[in-house]
Length: 292
Image (cartoon, rainbow, N blue to C red; front, side, top):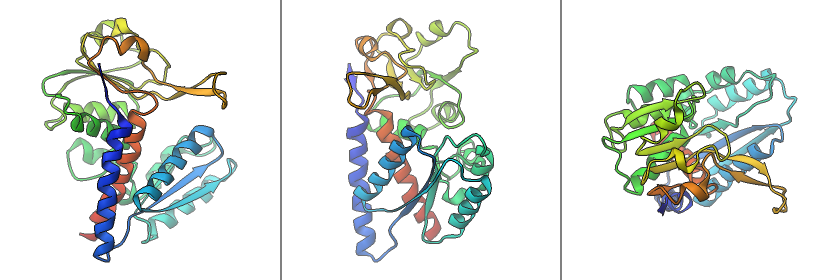
């Protein structure tokens, strides 16, 4: 079994981006600027946004963190998005999800200028992805593709099963892996909560990607021998052995499955760092597209 180390792969990308920033500075060009909007004090969201801001600082990007309490009105949030759309100093921005229930997430997503939508969630960018046109890929699927590519995982002609049909991971990933590209050219099955004979389907996968948010859901008897396993899950579970009282758990029962597969991502340290790396790539890309 070989570990698909997202932390190490993301570090490669970080070094490439640091060099890109150095060259831009040398030429007197603008430095990429990422803004992030955080609503409320959800622990997971605060951790994720903090990691994104920290990544900007390490690479040399400019970053702005905009925080609101959980009672902020939808109108105020939409007004701030409108302001960021017009702000020429900001190249890309994200609104960290989930949002409080009184705020319409779709309305917020639609309000973001597609040219600054570095999360790749806007329907314009999703449409471009389907048509294989230039745009921003959703960060997590893009990160998974980059992890496969940089670790020389052959995907052509492989049977791939994606568990989970969310609009930000499972569905776009199934499209990206099926298209005529590298990585890609897979025969893809998109499975979900209503899929029958799920275990049988999973055992036929050369590449199994779990993105359903159920800790330890994938066990060794669901995995084909020598399969490549990508674990997208990051659920906080109670863990009294940790000072913070919790630990992150993936969708895959790692101790079991790792003995059966050829490659596997850890949690944490697998897909998570690659998602952040992809966000940084999109931010630089947003600036470069504006300069053309």
